[in-house]
Amino acid sequence: MQLNQRLNIKHSQSIVMTPQLRQAIKLLQFSNLELSSYIEEEIEKNPFLENKKSDVLSRNNNSKIEESNNKESFSEDNEKDTQRWEERFQSKQRSNSFDDISSIEERIAEPKKSLRSHLMEQILLEIPEGLERRVAILILDLIEPSGWINFDIDEFTSQNNLEKDSTFKVLQKLQKFEPTGVFARNLGECLRLQLIEKGLLNQSIEIVTNNLEYLAKGEIQKLCKLAKVNEDKLSEYVNIIKSLNPKPATSFNDDDFRIEPPDVVIEKTKKGWKVELNKSTLPAIKIEEGLAEKVKNNIRKNENDKKFVSEAFNSAKWLLRAIEQRNSTTLKVAVEILKKQKEFFKNGPGHLKPLVLRNVAGSIGMHESTVSRVTRSKLLQTPWGLFQMKDFFSSSVGQNENEEAHSAKTVRTLLKEIISSEKSNRPYSDEKLSLLFKERGVLVARRTVAKYREMLKIPSSAERKRLMRLNKVINIKS
Image (cartoon, rainbow, N blue to C red; front, side, top):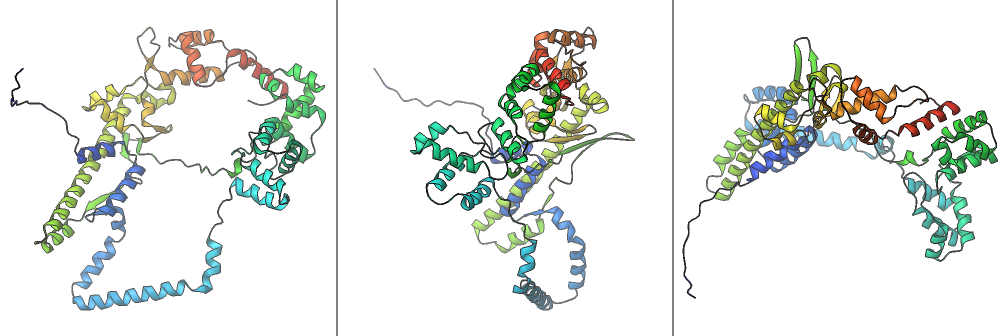
């Protein structure tokens, strides 16, 4: 066997993801708020980038100061700057005097107390030191955000080498803590603890709280027989139960409800439809070209500094172009969505047309992946409310005789409308719903109706009938 050495030349093509290209792709996916955070980080890293919005506030004052300072010498400017600094420092020291500490304390908001710390304070006050407090703290470790505990007393006592009777006594003490209903082991026990505190617990209502599953199923007669009450009395008990809090610790949850601002706004004007980016959340930056020139002139000999300045300046220019490209692409996609979904913007959510990424990408001359990145996390303000951009894309369902397709989201909206208009005690079956869709010009199979009904978490016709009967008996307005 003979071994030979050979030199081959091979020609091939490959796509290289440069750092600039990766940055441009990342910017496409950002919402306005995410873009603002990213730009703030870049401004801290790059000395040639500046926030244009913060610069606008002081632009007029700076121009006046420059005009007056051009007539004075540099030494006088320096003296004035030093004097201004000293005055500012002295006034700050005066404002931070110890005499004002009380007013500062009044302005500082008290931090929100957690559920655990709230209950721990009560344990330290109500439960004596020793074994009982140890058991109480062990049970506290099982507390859930709702205020309930996932607690099997036999398993708990065997794991921690405790006596069952003494553990149960500690649990009873804990169940008297505020808010009423904490340390309950299930929904029924939570409700009973609150009824005891209000002085409303009796044998009949206790039986109702022990058999809530019959109430959920709408088996009224069975529940009346167990509780030995008539339907009117049961209705009274149910209304009392409705006034209780099934999750007593929810007030300690630290979930702040916040509506995100839109990235794009589409509104109807006298001249037609107007599409624009939300400028209030859109960041604006500028490049300090004058600073870059000064720095370049002062570092003629140092090659490393020259390299840093050149790279930082080029990076700033590239970022500015990438942001402009991102904004332009976002507007193009938003305008095309408006064109494709004109019926939605005119008449509301029930008129959404089938639309896929390929349709929009072909119209604006871009790749599907680019449109997908643009619509990933952006919000669009419409005359009908705030929607995610991706909500306007939906597959087609049920073509009618005129070969007009309907979007899956439109079909789901129609399904909710039809079911909401059902007559009392006569809910529509899936087969009937399919026929009602056909009357409206949408061909949807029974299985498709069942699939969308389950997707919307709408019960079956039999279950809805039970709920209607329950609502009628206990006079609950649905």
